Length: 429
Ligand SMILES: Cc1ncc(COP(=O)(O)O)c(C=O)c1O
Image (cartoon, rainbow, N blue to C red; front, side):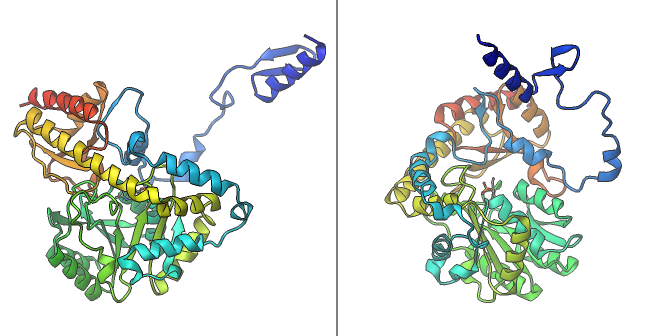
């Protein structure tokens, strides 16, 4: 090698931090550290930070990528074989080549995409494109909405159980979580009224259709009651319609937003669930002063979602292939759900109870009270099976032992995973 090549190689190794020149002594291999200088003292940070408001462990556990080869029976997203990756790749390639999309975009989002989201709710009769704010995924939509509409320290009503990411966003915003009881028909109106009256809350976060984790669908009668109760309480209903593309029975009721005349409902809709987790595009829809409050909240969070991503999202959901994709996803989910239900009936007999979900991708399994969910989840973890213990989904003390199982994975994974779960539960009976 020429001296110039050696010099360049040394310069590169120095730049990468792998070697260090010590003038007058030579060049030495740098001691590997985790980036912390020896003797560095971070203990002062505990005083500066104070007590933690939110514990990110539960949501973190849900997002952690399991080791390769794991049998995944809990995840929030479609597995790779069901994702719209072909449509996304084409759309993003085209969008990336349009320089105007790399320029600044309006904070509220790319206008044609806002118009598409508005048209999706009751054929455009509720929201106008101006009522739509595009943000980077459903989780961001929840966090922004909580922060913008509910002052720190104030109560927010949530179903019991509810989405663990909403619990974590509420805690991070310093809100007081108030659990409200539900059953298979969704939130119980008399308990909702009582919670509003008792706490003076001005917001209720709900998933009226295929709730995650319980799979409940709010009945038509209760939909009307919830809107009346919110009107009486002069409160917002934050409707997270996360599974609106994943209706497996074709019978999902219209969203609460469709029956809202006076701007009580703030409607959240994400594309990540039905396209792919990496499509970080969602919409918050709201009318009246709430819309302005949300827009200003959003602009202080981050300015706007990357233009090519927004344009690609629009191209995907308006492509002829999108409907075919959704049909294929729903057909696969029906087959996989039925596989899980069959396997649970064969391998667990009547040792655990559940309702067959009509939409979404999760099944809520109630274990016998004397079988601790934590122990089962830990044993499953040791056996390479990923399940989600019920605790993460409760804003207060759980009323039983539960696991959330996802039926989006392949039938072979479902059969093997449920078989191992059945054996672990049988050993404790
Ligand atoms: C009920 C519900 N809402 C919102 C989200 C957030 O999804 P994303 O941020 O990927 O759109 C999730 C994800 O698991 C969810 O289950």
